[in-house]
View (cartoon, rainbow, N blue to C red):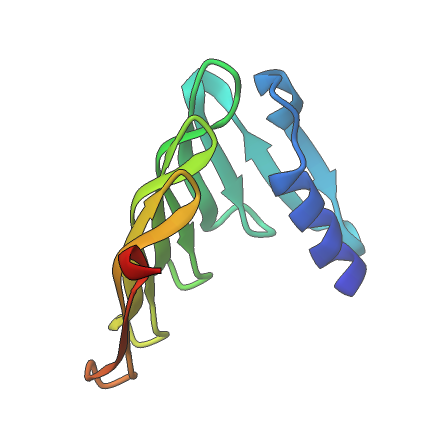
Length: 135
């Protein structure tokens, strides 16, 4: 299973600039499939069995992440959302606890954290705030 996770990571983050290179069906253990589709400038990846989307986001004309990208749990809950500009994290990002409450949130500028990033516990109380603009 560790090999499969590494393979998925390489596939997701190691793709070249050719949008067509993102179109594939990857066979995994026990003949389950993860369907990856990047047609029409939208990237979709499903969990095995194609019952639930895992990743959903927009692609620019070079096949790079652009706009809103979301990661979903098998339950269908949106676990995280980050905005991109031509492959770089740019704008708002949020990650949630399993119960749906915010875990942390902050802003990106050219793949670097900026402004105040806030972390919350699973009850919604603030745990920490770090101001990355002062660093």
